[in-house]
Length: 98
Image 1 (tube, rainbow, N blue to C red):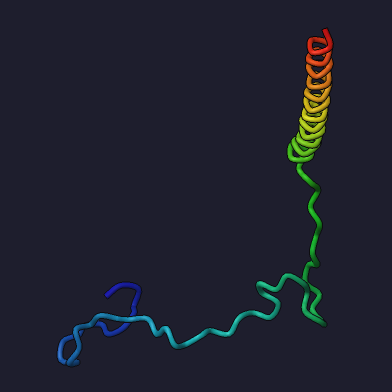
Image 2: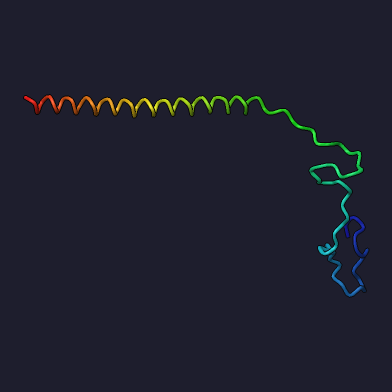
């Protein structure tokens, strides 16, 4: 048997010697372990805010600029289409007026 777990030898015990873990038993957790905030009365380390990653901030800034450029491009394309439609209507009216 490994790590001194279970019987030293299953001989004469009526078992196979296989050791299983008891899933029903829950070990008590250390106070404050896993809590996102310090428990009242504990002097443990408090939450320390991390500095934002410079590469992520730069990416967000560039992405915002890219979005503004795309919006302006769409606005100019729509304006150009309206101008072209107005010019084509004027040409049709000139052609019909002859």
